[in-house]
Length: 137
Image 1 (cartoon, helix red, strand yellow):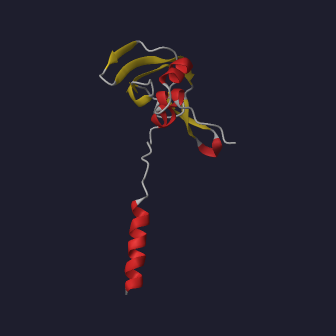
Image 2 (tube, rainbow, N blue to C red):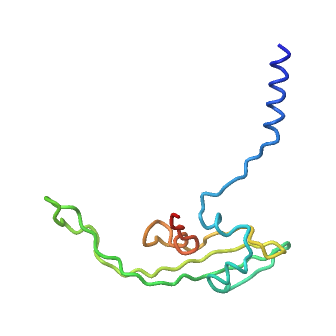
Image 3 (cartoon, one colour):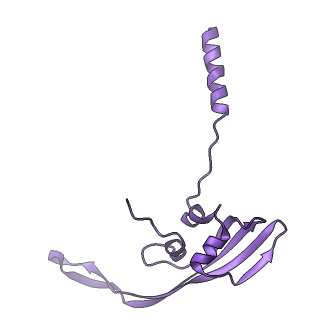
């Protein structure tokens, strides 16, 4: 019986030292939080506004301006032929706006997207532009 008690106590002590580091499902935060805000602005352009918030600065950034032509979509018809048109071809104007909160040492503490539209390949143009998928190596 004492062996079980010591084993349980040892397990409890070893598990007490474990911590879980929260990870964000947001690819933009995963890519840029903890990095220097200078790297972000060097890659994507300067902010349009900044406001001091006591221990750091909140920057407003806009960018990623791009015009794309999205082709018409068609349903699949019989025998693999093109069927009825589902959506017309259109021109889409892509852009992104974000707020970057930095600490006193200019390290990004949070990034919040405040202006986003659907992207070419997914639901968020900001995610496509600010945190593009890395090619498999």
